[in-house]
Length: 251
Image (cartoon, rainbow, N blue to C red; front, side, top):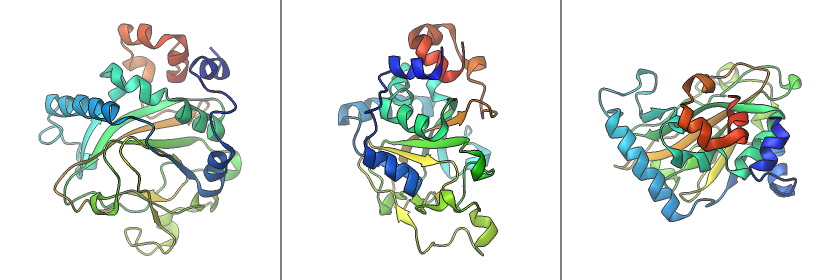
């Protein structure tokens, strides 16, 4: 199924994004869509994540060595149907269409900054020549209120247009940048980040995990982080239908 037909079936129209939202994506390299999920929906997703974290011992032996400052569960879109509504949300799909054109889902990861941890270098998620067009984009569903105290993500507006990476021009990419902005928003909000945008998590100074679900999409002509087709169970393929399988590039 072509991407436009899949998006139409999943509820994406020319009016899904407002002019102001498109302008934010283009000018700033990110956009925040406040409280798209209800409190009940957020709690339901959190309950599933807590179960998956326990099953995979994500707090202990199952800690990802590459991301020790986080409690992490990978490939969540293949582990429970509750995540379907997140990666298929029209606002998210329309944002990816705006940035990437023909695209597919690359990876979906639940990640929570551990108490007392979470500060990251400013970084980009993808790298290449901006003139060749954007090739990847990240997004985060905020399952807790993101605020300064619990390590809200920092972004540098407009940096997706600079054609350089933080480590190329900053003496210390961990340091505060004079132009940085914290993405502070209520639980249930969606944040979309251009793959070239300078960004990074900040220190979680609370005694609670700060959870989010992050989905990366990539242009259809570039490699994906994870092979979605190889991970797709028959019952999941049937549930998400032809349009969902098109977004996964899985038949």
